[in-house]
Length: 119
Image 1 (cartoon, rainbow, N blue to C red):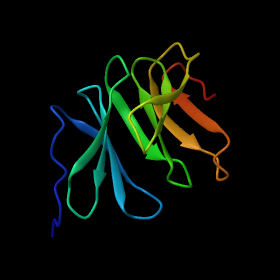
Image 2: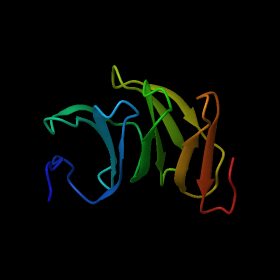
Image 3: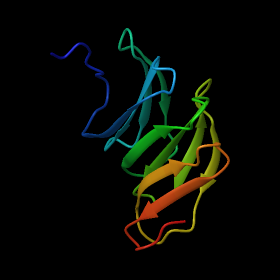
Image 4: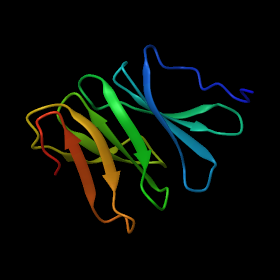
C-alpha cells in the first residue's frame, strides 16, 4: 500500500533515499534537480539547483545534515539540508557520475562514473 507520493519533479525520478532520522526524503531527477521532502507530509522543503543536466543519484551523509548528489554533468555536489546552497563540488570525472557515497564518519565522498573510475 502506498502511503505517500512525493510529487513535484518535472521528469523521471532516478533515486530516492530516507534521512538517517527517518524524517526527510531526498530525490534525484531527470529535470536537473534534487528535492528534499518532509516524509510525514510529502511537502517539498528544498529544491537543489546547481547541476547542469540530469541528477542521477542523491543520498544523505550519515549524520543527515547534508545531501550528496551525482549528475550527468560529471560532478557530485554536497548540499546543506538547512538551505539550498551548494557547499562543495567534486569534479574530475570525464564521464557522467552515476553514484556517490559517503564514508561512515562523513568525512569522505566516493563517486562512481561511466568513465570507468571511482574517485
